[in-house]
Image (cartoon, rainbow, N blue to C red; front, side, top):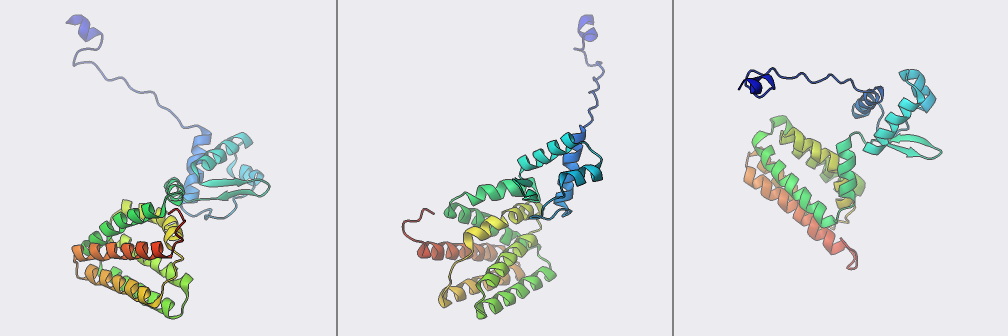
Length: 248
């Protein structure tokens, strides 16, 4: 019994303190630059300052800077273009990974994912929405009607994407909002660009009005049903327009 206590097997044994570890300068620089990108200091699509300018501004060595930039390229936040510099590719690691994955997925898989996200978000929005959020959705419906009336397909697609993001934001689920925002580009690229005839356009608009009505009435079931119907209509219309030989 005495030996057990002496060699640490007894209840009176004092915990061992773990050694303190300090992040390397390169790791600190990666964290700093990542935060700078995430907060919009370097917007997506812009070219970052040249290497020498960053060395002088940050007060770090060339090898440290190159190591940090390389890490951010590996994470998908930056993109090195031979002979043209380094550009901001994405504002977050999550966005980079998710958009790349969704961009390589089949259209049907993306539509199923959209159904899952938007159906749940619409039901949650009905239970948690504010009056101001409902007003905003009504405004977007009016903007969509104006774009369709003006036969401005690009504007209509943009308003539709903003409308669905606004519904998701009304869900009040921060993680869901983040995931959906990061997938927005991939969803738009897969689902946008459809040529809607008058009948389909009216049905599409009617379902959106039904969705907003359900959210305003705090009818979670009705909101989920309307959201699912919107995606189903997009799927059916997109399938009908696609060439038979195309692998979706």
